[in-house]
Image (cartoon, rainbow, N blue to C red; front, top):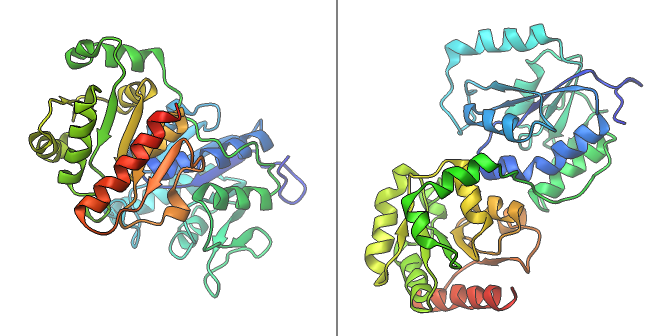
Length: 334
């Protein structure tokens, strides 16, 4: 059991105001904290979308409080006029412990201190603000994100349960997916998902390269389903137009849960290093993750056989061949 000053904290706040993939990488740490604090009320302070994390991971999180941004954090614009009321509400909650699970603490340690909890814990940068030397851990600059977060929970006294990611898929998710006309046309055939999008343009492999991979898979007889957000529809159309083979466009048509249901039954996912790759890792769906402009040591799925990472370089032909080789290896190892 995790104890602070010899007592298990009754009310715990966890700050992690990040996007989907980052949140899924925190699930092992949330699982470890719940195992160590079985009767505590755990509140996740996260981005507005993370209300879904509270619903989908109710075993680990009891409440969700949306963060109205904070100066210096890039995920959402800071609504500074809302910050006083937000902080007042958190302070009135009188948390026994507030845990900073949001990066090195360079910006977020100031924010977590403003929660007004009896004690706080987290990471700190060397030479940076450390609210409490007894409960703050120097931020590791190496290793996987999952491992870094578990290092903190272990430091606080919570035994690591496992490094496995999770993404619970519900009957409602599967029903929503099955209701889509394009999915009905798939029938019982094996299919491959392509996900050419990603939050940052700098971390996207070019659409033409995804088109080459999708076209080759189509010629091998696999139905190819291209996924993305509604905002990524032009990118998806660019891939499909360049592929030279028919594909199924599901961009903007699936909720997060329906997308997970789609990946759950997919033969393979080929994607950028983005949130959907972590959903596939959580579901155990084989994947080829194209890593462009990100830190593979930190973000790559831990099972390197089931989830193959490619950092393409050289000519376009070299890049295509590297990704296709990973696709072939994934398909033959099923």
